[in-house]
Image (cartoon, rainbow, N blue to C red; front, side, top):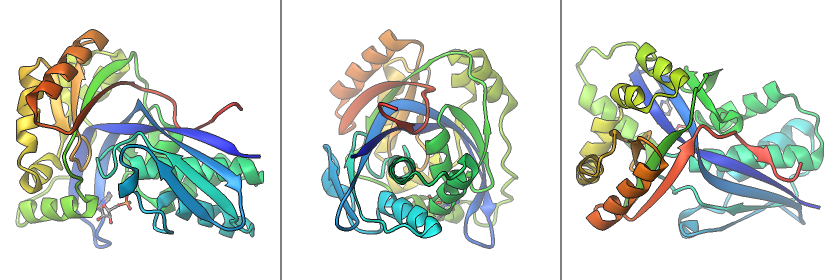
Length: 299
Ligand code: C5P
């Protein structure tokens, strides 16, 4: 018997970042939108814990116990006194180290899959607690849709969204490490007065109305200058998307994937073609959101 869970990627339509806290993390106002690029995690009983991965970026995925899927299985097993003897297989479609929560998706997916396989009876709150221990973005991968994340991004408030938003994602030639981007943010803001992060009312209103022009005017990412500082070529990708008619372009989370908001799916397809032809990125995908969070398949 095996269980498969499908988990979406995310884009941050607003990422407001406060000053570094004593624990090294940063308080955030993080507006997540789940979009239709998915990883699938399949869990099957096995002799011992084992992780495998398939997909175009599979070679970059660690298969040891640093993998968030393995850590999720170990955390749930530890809490319920279960032997974590499972094979976790990840079918990976979300870019690796791309700022789209691919690792977090695998953590949330493995957690939900193991929970279903083992029948732990864990409550949604317990699963969300384990997600928050695994990483700041993991709770959102479980819930999906759209949400405002505060604290280090793990405290979620679901948001109303009044329509589908069409996106184009440009994958970069190499990855960026999230801690390195936050460290660069600290370096760039050293000596400056970093304001408390707050969610933009105009942005929440645009989401609620499903209005892409209004959302385009309100998107922001405080990590973008740090990502561009570490990866200056991303400016060329942003310029290519803008020239192709994107309503807005921004770095997704800590990057280096760049995200372009389109008026509708037809416009997204045209922007995607122009980005492919621009030679400023490794691959281009279109997706829309919001979409549901981690979901057990065939349930
Ligand atoms: O929580 P997660 O493991 O995903 O965070 C990865 C790294 O990103 C942290 O070690 C920290 O350097 C940085 N981070 C941060 N503030 C946050 C979230 C992440 O500084 N709110």
